[in-house]
Length: 173
Image 1 (cartoon, helix red, strand yellow):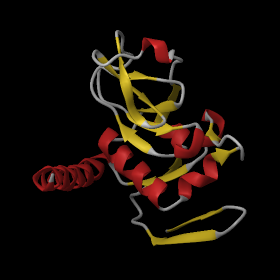
Image 2 (cartoon, helix red, strand yellow; image 1 turned 120 degrees about the vertical axis):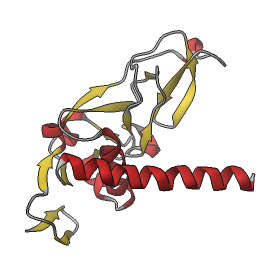
Image 3 (tube, helix red, strand yellow; image 1 turned 180 degrees about the horizontal axis):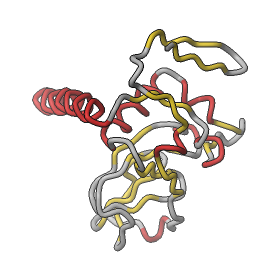
């Protein structure tokens, strides 16, 4: 099976994907949760991490998510950037959490990173003066993914490389 998608600007083909892999909309495999508003006056230098469109933006007294989450920046110039939150984090309204229904969370993170880097996420962005992504534009976004055991294997390998890159960065500081 060939995977192909079209935008008003271009048509792209990814070539053959294995029969057992699926192409589904993001809304089929995740719950999309908009972050909550928080005043900058409530941001502190300590406490629970607060994530927004620019990743970690400060700390506060409360949190929304016990576990790390896959986040997508949904407002402004960083629209579409994918982040991985810390445990016990607060997510503000400039980001959305992608909560897996039927997909490995780390595989989702790496898949969304690839979709950002390739420019595919751009098809979900609306607005010109203030770019934004909404739940309505993100839900029909098509993603390709293998069966769950393969997702976990791929995510483990990519996580290993991510960890190795972090170690190398620290060694060079």
